[in-house]
Length: 171
Image (tube, rainbow, N blue to C red):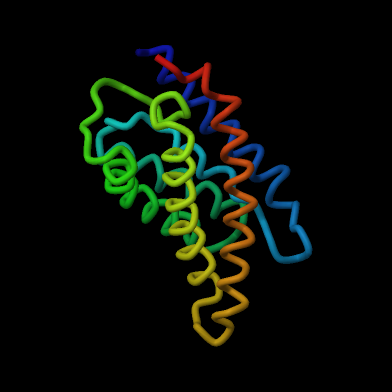
């Protein structure tokens, strides 16, 4: 158990570094920016205590805000995503209660359910993030297209991340 906790600490630090040093400087067409750091929230064990899920999400978002100078929009979006996560897990697993410290993965959820889980939470995160960033609905269509394009790009990076981390975080 302790070994798995250290894996999450290293994953947290690694995702923050990749996001801050590489992905925040990568803007595709001046429009889309992958937000891979949210993989940390997606890959936490299913039965992680709610307070730990929300606290770690807040700290993760706040760190990104500090490096992005974005006035807590990452923190708000990440905490909202973490808040919705338990309901999404129940939805994609068919209301079955999972035992132990199972980490969402292709082998635990299945391919379609994992992609649905990730896509729904990524879309929620991006909607909050981009609408807080623009803070008005005057450019609704442009913001909506930015959400969809960035979410698609983030989903691709996230699925690759799930695949690469499958063996490292399996019980």
